[in-house]
Image (cartoon, rainbow over all chains, first blue to last red; front, side, top):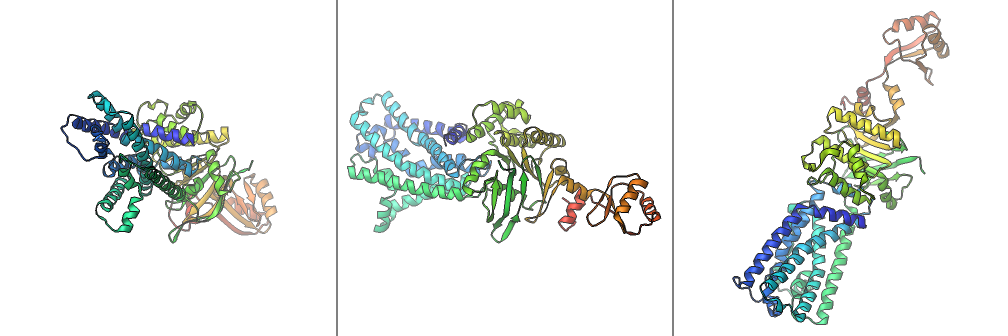
Length: 255
Length: 307
């Protein structure tokens, strides 16, 4: 399978959308952090505020599903779906003599890596660089670094499930536009459920999804139980989504 | 090692209520160039997609390199190269980069194979030109390069001459012949251009509306299409002797039913009939037979449509 991962990495490195996203997110991230640091943009009430890291408030934008789904779905649309539609290069991969489950896993690994770089790594690294450049390096003490490490590790675990869902959507729709629309719809539905639905059963269900965890993992204080629950939700969701993905991909007829 | 590269057994594919192909039994031996002939929509591409594993059969089985275990067929795909319908290329990559992706996917060690393949398909000098700026012919050649990159034992080509100019078609034909002759490459090539396949293949499968109508060798096809006089006399042995001695020809065949197929004297039927009757033979039947390839195909599919 390592050859498939290398092939996927090669394709990702040559994917224009990936580089456009890197450029856009780098610029946007630098701008938002800059505006926060010069206190031109007063953002309050975030999880980072309560952790005493208000200098990193701009990061909260990048942890909102409604925002980061646009990044992830765009990459999925132009990196995954296009292989099925415009160029149909998926045919060559399918007849290359590799198991379909391996092809799916290689795509998931590299697509997730690309999404992680654009959505999490770049904003976080830029935030740390700017905070230090603006002379606020003292906020990055041991306690806060521990908080950031825990929060982003758990966030990444949930994020893996999200990229698996988006990958599944991209493979089913086989179209970049539809991938973006359906991912956006999913995020909107989850947002509506979170904000407006009060039915106890649905609320209970929602609270055990990765979408609820996206905000929960940034709480400054998390009990061991909550951490384990978060890891369990991510693990179980990932296993279920990946199994569905492999099953679907194994049965998929390539046009 | 199996002598058969591909064998299908009652292979069928159904989409909703219609069969795209039905009960197809195809046999391709090592070293053959198998021409799969049929009109557009006859089921050629469906058949090739089933063989390459892009789609799954409704019923029937596929045996590739002697292996018919569905779970192990995927491993046998490593020994094949294929272009199905249009060549699938990354438009924003160069020819070299396109081949590199496939080299990585197939796990082929060393990058020399890329240069060799580019040389083989005549794309060595394309440099940094992206595939999206290639002509249709160049794209076809790059597609062929991708199929040949891993030095396959079995090459599957679906209408590979689409978009090629006459010179490109000749070059492709020669390339396939060279690979078949020098490397023993087995080829399955589909086309709706009968005359084109006739120059390349040595075995033919004729498909129409999802059914394999006939499977025949090049020699058999030649015989069926070759113009001849069909002569039926009361004593075929004597007839053959007379043709040989008095008309000085050996270009004839005595068929199992006693009919003589005479491949010359087509413009001089009178001489033939006079010679036979003057030697005391009774001519029961004498007619000129044989079709052009197109007419033969047209008759076979039971219509006037010419491929």
